[in-house]
View 1 (cartoon, rainbow, N blue to C red):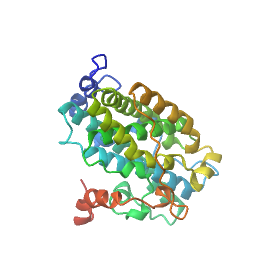
View 2 (cartoon, one colour):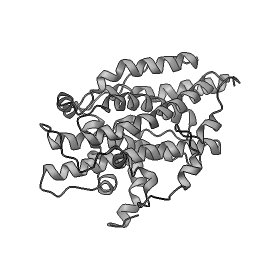
View 3 (cartoon, one colour):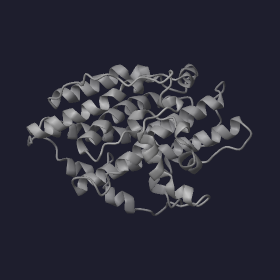
View 4 (cartoon, helix red, strand yellow):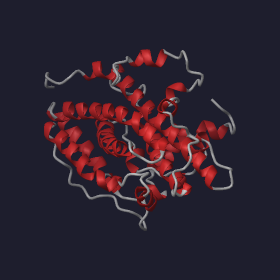
Length: 318
C-alpha cells in the first residue's frame, strides 16, 4: 500500500465535526428520546417540523411518495451497511461503517415520518408512522433504487464500491435539496450533506487504497465496481412524481446530477488506477424499476431479516 494515504482507521472514529464516535454515542444527556442516536433532533434543530404544512400547490400524494423514495434509499442501504458490524476487517472500520449506517437510518426516520404525516393529511387521516412504513410494507411497496439493496456477500471491496457510488449520488441530490420548498426535505438535506460528504470521502479513500494497492487488491476493487455498475443507470431515471415536484420547487431531477457524479467517480477511478466499468445496464420491466416497486431478489432477504421482529410482535415498541 502507498504510505502517503491518510490513515483511515484514525479518520473512522472521528466525525466531520471533530467529535469522537465513542463519545458521541455515549453522550445521552439532554435527549428524551431513547432512540436519539438514530436521527432525533435533525428537524427540530433546523426549526422545521414533521407536521409542517405541505407547500402550496403541491399534491400531498406526490410529496409522500418522494419522501418514501429518499427514505427507503437510506433505510435499505443503512441495513446493508449495518451487516458489516462484527464482520468488518478491523474494529475501526466496524465503527466507521456503523456510524455511516446510523447516519442513513436517521435520515430514513425523518423522511418516513414526513411521508406518513403527509399521507395522513392527503387522505382520510389514517396515515402510517415510521415504524409501520419500515416494518409492515411488502417488497412491492418499497420505492428505493436497486443500488441500495444489493448484497455484497461480505466482500469489503464490493461494499466500498456500492458506498462510493451511492454516497456520491445521494450527496449530489441533497446538495440540490437544500433549497427545497418543503422545510423537512431542506432540513434533512442540511445535515445530510455533512454526513454524506464523510461517507463519500471514506469510500473514496478505501477505493484508492485497494485500487492503487497490491495487484490482488486492485483486481478485487475492479471486480467489485464491475459487479455494481449495471445498477448505476437507474440512479438517474426520473419518476413522474419527481417531475411534478421539480416544477413545484420541492424535488430534484436525478438526471441533473449525472455530470457531477460522473466527474467525481472518474476522478476517484483515475487516482485509484481503476478503469471505468463498461457493463450493460439493468433496464426496466414494463417501464418500471425500484421507484415503481420492482426490485431484485436481494430485497426479500433484506426484509425477512429487517422486519422479522416487528412481524413476530405486532404493535411492540422499542
